[in-house]
Amino acid sequence: GLSSPMPYRLLRRSLHDGLQRLWRMRGADGGFGGAGASDGRTTSLVVLALASAKFFHVPAPAEPAALDAWLAAHPGTSAGERAALTFAACFADQGKPTEATVQD
Image (cartoon, rainbow, N blue to C red; front, side, top):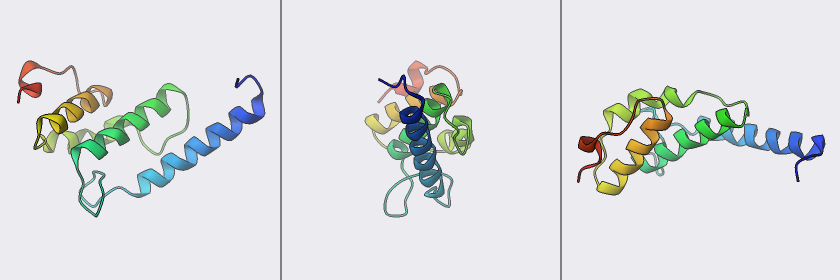
């Protein structure tokens, strides 16, 4: 397990470094995605990574709420993307999903 301090420190450092690198990949519009275009699914995964870091007390480059504006401005283009965005919004402290936000 992680009872020994050394592996835990190495894991925390690796997670911290990975989050820093991920944050540097943020797009010009404030979101995340591949090929230069931000998308809801990728940005949602970043929100979850930031929320997980916060939960496990790993230093992160930003709070999940740093992506609130991007999440609010991008409703999603498919049912799957809207579901991912709604889930991420909950983790970014935007509130609980409503029936209107998850309808297709």
